[in-house]
Length: 387
Image (cartoon, rainbow, N blue to C red; front, side, top):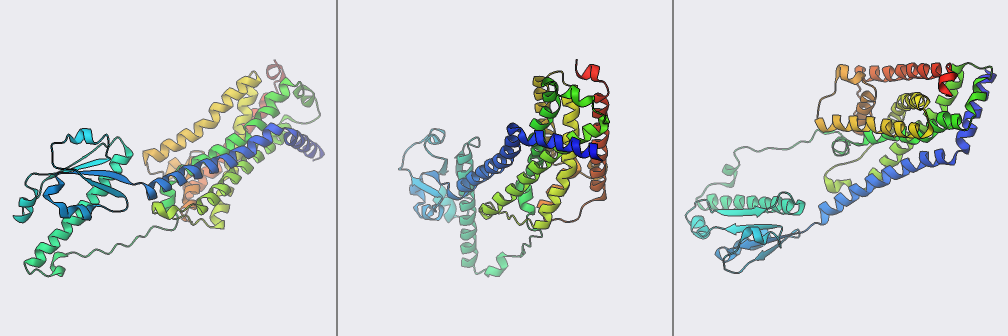
């Protein structure tokens, strides 16, 4: 027991004295929420304050339609009579509406009044202008239809044969989880990034400082030595990932997400569940990084390999999100996938978790111990480790 405490004390003192490790464990949790909050704030600002320039060609045919199309977000310009190239006009306007030559006659004869909407879907502003303009034209069409039917003596109730009442059954935070689906992957990535510097320093760093060999000659088992290193690396990863999750939740609660039509109502219990699920993630990440760092032949090689390793889970989890594949049963037994789904469910205010997901958590912990055992065996071969 004294050897165990001495080994842990030694590793923690070295980790705390390493300013680079402390900086990495703090920078990532501060940087990621700030970056994500900035991106979402930009999207909200763009969504709520964007205005579009729209040109109406042949507007003299139906001047009464212009007031119905213009609003706070659509600046409508009625062009004078003449011949225009709609494609050329798109260089100055976000969208161009061309009224047909027989627009008024068709309206009088109750025939479809032809018009053309020109826009460039490769540009977000043009696409947004077209979407807003379509909504305005659809509203104007419904209004004209109602006026025509009322003129023929048809009651307004007869024009609504089916009345639909929309009832949204989404739980608080569920729409937020859809929009912010990358958050679990980012939080799991933080567990790797925050522990990376400590994992390298306690393995390859000690080897290059020639302090690993004196450690191996101490009367302590390699399993004990590796567990002491693992406790520090896993703790740095867990603290960094948990801090990232808490700060992300705080940033999301401060943003006006209602502008995007979503809500963010994550309870303290859900946030505690997220932090709890990050513990096996940090355990597996720490064991895996220690093993890879020990197998590396130099400090630089360890940096390169661990740099690739920390990105791999993020890429895989993002691929799962983009594929829209339903993750269930056996797929939940894959390490990090079960934690991703439980974290996503916690952010969605969904407290029901599949037993398969908990099985995945148990497998992640078991794999952590197995990888740690492989790393401790590497310490039993000092001639290869120190060569």
